[in-house]
Image 1 (tube, one colour):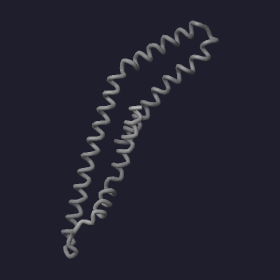
Image 2 (cartoon, helix red, strand yellow):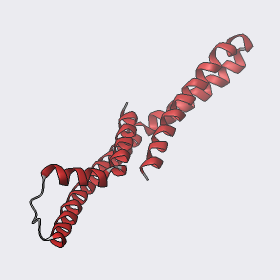
Image 3 (tube, one colour):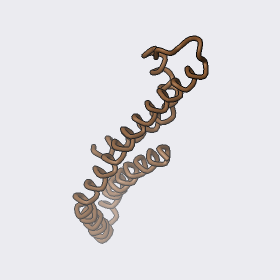
Image 4 (cartoon, rainbow, N blue to C red):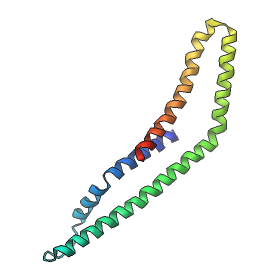
Length: 135
């Protein structure tokens, strides 16, 4: 659940980064910055300054949000690392016991064990893919 949250946050931050400059320009026009109509050089400088301030503010917020997500993911890994290791150890012991118990039980239990491993790998891969998109 938490890794899905981190994945969704990374994908949302990626989209926000991709559209940051367009959002800054839209915010500039939406707030309708008061500038002198006669002084075009001053207008350009004020527009650049307003857009740069917006981009700077949003980048700081994105960095803080990304930092919180990374810390949350590290805490999750720290809390559950022992449980995940124990899960794989019990899974290996279970597979060995299944193979020693005979083939009639193995056909039912091996797909279950492989699905458990597959779900863990799938969850981790989705977070890694979201991280690559964020880069």
